[in-house]
Every structure is written in structure tokens, then in C-alpha cells.
Amino acid sequence: MSDWEVEDISIDAMISDIAMVADAARLERFALFGISQGCAFSVRYAVEHPEQVKCLILMGGFLRGAMKRNSPEQEQLFEASQTMVRQGWGSPNPVYRHFFTAAYIPDANPEQLRGFDELQRVSVGPGNAARLNEMNSQLDVSELAGKVQVPTLVMHCDGDRRVPLEEGRRIAALIPNARFVALEGNNHALLEGSPAFDAFFNEVNAFLKEHADPS
Image (cartoon, rainbow, N blue to C red; front, side):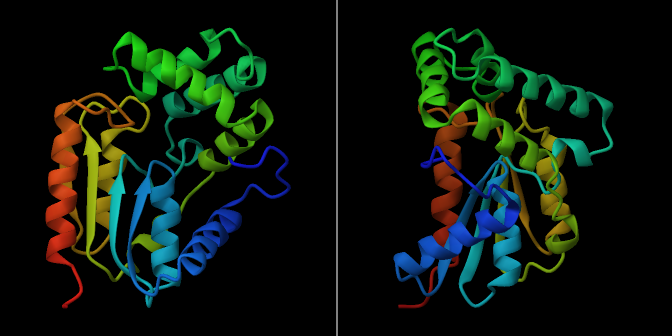
């Protein structure tokens, strides 16, 4: 989303981005953190680069996109979201973006809601937003989940309105020995000051400490 003219928006491009960031930071072995659709990318990267990834932390994610869940409701929501993106994502009028904000952070206060609306508008244009949304809807790395060989922590807010809790549980069920933690709240994106925010960092800190490389 840092580029407004993007030739390739694809799963392969996302995996390449992770690799380039790791190379640029000269990371030899690291914990990989995925949020939302980033969980699917992280699972694939961990399977393809087992020598680099020492553990996975996955939050609010899914292995299969909305159009791969055999759910008419999820498919209808995706189609509605595409219409919202194409018709009004870049507009100064935030009414279209409220559709996403209400799903991502329903527990937010008015100031947080306004800030998230504006962040959407300035961070990506409607064309790329629609392409990203389409790509995410067609994701499916379910078959790779069983090949993950590293410790994995999966977290999901129990009332998440963007990605169903069942999709988070499915990640943990398919990844061998993964640990699942349900967090309190309805948000897809964590909000500072919420119970889920503090619980998330407590779980992550304990997990990283448990799987830290010996000094």
C-alpha cells in the first residue's frame, strides 16, 4: 500500500515482500507476525522458509478468503464490500468507508472511528483497495497449514465482525500443535485500552520468551 501504481498485487508478491524485508533487515531467524490476511501469507512463508521462521504469531486471521468458505453470507458481504470500495473509497465523504470501519473496530470511540476512516482514504486508492480485497477473498492456503513445523500462537477476538472466530479456530486446528487464544471483544483491529489489547501483548510476550533462542 506504500505505492499507488502497483503492477502486481498477488499472493506471490506478498511473499516476495516478506522475503525482501527480512533480507533488508538482515534477519537470519525470526518470529513472524501475521494479522488478518497476513496470517495466510505468514503460513505460506513459514512453510517455504523453515530455516528462517522460528515461530508464528497469528492474529485475527484466516487461511481461506471469503469466497472460499462455502458461505453465501460471506460471499454477499464480499460483493457488498467491493461495491463500497469502487463507489466511494477515495471520496471525502466517509459513509462508504464506515462499512469497513464498523466491521474492523465496532467498539471504538468516535475519535478512533474518524481516524480509521481517514486512514483508509489516505493509505490506498480505490483501485488498489479493490484489487487487494479481491486477492484476499480468493486466498486459500489450507493445504499448507499441516506443513507448518514451528511453534504457533493463534489469537482471535471472540466477537470479530470482519473475520469469523471460526476461521481463527480453523487455523489452530490445522497447524500441528498450535495454541489458540480467544480474546475478549468485537474488534478485528486491536484498540489500545481494550481488554483484548492488554491480553494480546501478555500472550505474545510469554510466547516469545518461551521460544527465544538460547543466549
